[in-house]
Length: 166
Image (cartoon, rainbow, N blue to C red; front, side, top):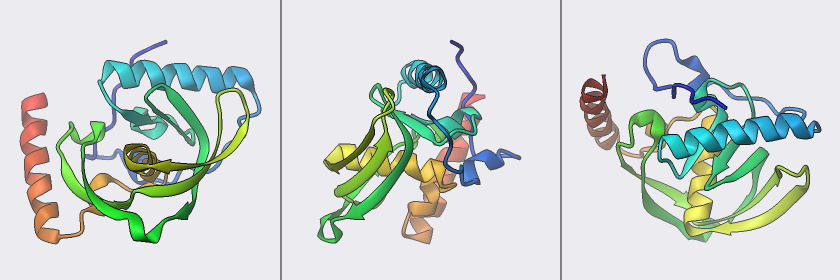
């Protein structure tokens, strides 16, 4: 496998703001290759999760803690479960922001083995799934910050982190 550069929201990295369409994942070798690439990079960058487009891959897949989700969808939300959560993001060099999300969701996805699954996720699992799915839907973390003042503060922190990272 190979470690890929992670895409950061600057310049012409439009893949971070592009909706990645559903893909055909009937080929088990393709699923395995995507899984291996996502997992190796997630571990390398020390992330809880990573989406394929964060690595420049036009695949509708992400990996959270070693599990890869293909063509993932949220199919239901517990509307009474919205709570704030301090999220970080590899694309934003792990600068954190308070994001409100439902803490209980029903999801659909294909597994590495090719099985189609519908299940309920809660708490951190639900937050991480939604965060990574946002990447595949062209939504960056900053888009989910409710306050324009907080959004501005977040971007200032990110710009400082970016300068240090060069």
